[in-house]
Image 1: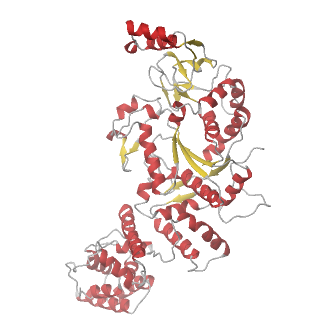
Image 2: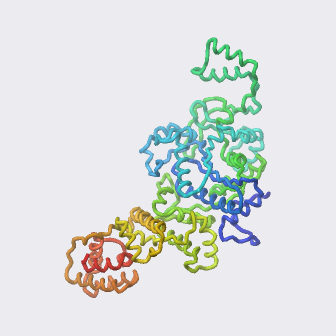
Image 3: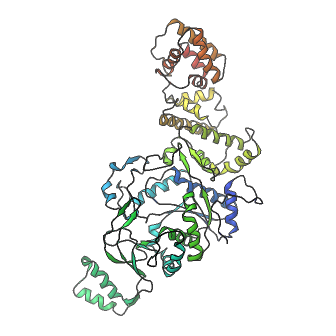
Length: 590
């Protein structure tokens, strides 16, 4: 097979056009004639806060897996935690298992500092709640997948090495290290004749080291007792002595065993970007389970060991690791690489995701603001296009989803392409399509969130026609759940809906006669029925007709409804709250 572009969604002119990008990817997976189960893979190095940007691989893989399942295939979606990677720098921001972000100074940063260069799974959890640093963040990755209903099999790289699952492929790479050097030299500088593609873990200091001095893949055949004595001599506290030891040695003397393949190493310094992590200088021996392959070999080794058929990845890998990965797969491991698909990164409020700069948001945070199906819809969009995820403009994303849903149920008209997309994608983003569902407009839900009274929220929503009289109870409950999410959004962004409506009683106020007359006239206008923009314009006109300062007139409205001197765009707000209450409040009757 020729090199396949990772930009999978670039179609040839004669290819069938699909409304949903995942169908195009599934076609290419089927072209491989893969064995069942088909394996869809993603992965992440659990080096710090698993944020929303990391969900790309989870959900891009999920949609392809679901399309393949729809076509009758058995599919496994695996997700590797590359947790044997070394910690190369201290993150500025971490998060606990509940998703609360904390600064490095709020945890045991010293334990992290002392373990720079060590694998994530060998570093104590700075929160003290999990088995290791790597395990802590792997748990958050699993929680994120569960929250968006993506059924992944989370696979620990450390466990793959320690169990021996990666041992055969590691040995194969070392057996063919001359060819490995030749391939790698096309992509990486400083690959000399002494380079060995294996990074042992130092038995003395626990750091990952890159200096292998010799390789023994055949294993010297020795008696079991000799092997035990050799190991015991390195650990005096475990050394047995006396008659019992002599009896055990005698009984084992006739048994022969092949030692596992090993490498000799020297613990040298590690380059970690703008700093150097010092090695301890220890000279030792490690088995192939006591270290790791460098990334450019480890990724293809995962493909072989896990039988991967498809893997999405970010454009950084498309321009870096993918070219070497497929070369290593074909010309070192002698396997075919999986079907690739590069996705464009998206930004958060126009800026790149960055744990160190604090520009992150977790899945758990997002799901406090919108439903899981809305988030899945965001990732169902074309992955070849860069997008911005904006909390400030979250109402627009929710409105998009609501439109998609309405198109699916033939409730509104749309053009051919939009209709085809909605009909194909909507069943993949919701748990079950149900026409009886009720969606409150997001900003209207934010308005309802200005009051704590759940009965009043429902009463207003029904009065304004957003909840039909015949709506089933489950649909009503689902609709009102959006109110809390929209309220959380208003509070997080401190936007125009972040106010408390004083519904139960009229706040204390004192207006002059001209203002009272203007309020009466505005009440009459609203009672007659008008749109938000018309009400907003009338506020200005009413103030001018009564020679009331416009700013003072808006303040009068905010005082009556919020007991504040400022608030949301008043015309829009007054149009969304139940009309009878607005009219009565402007007349100071309740």
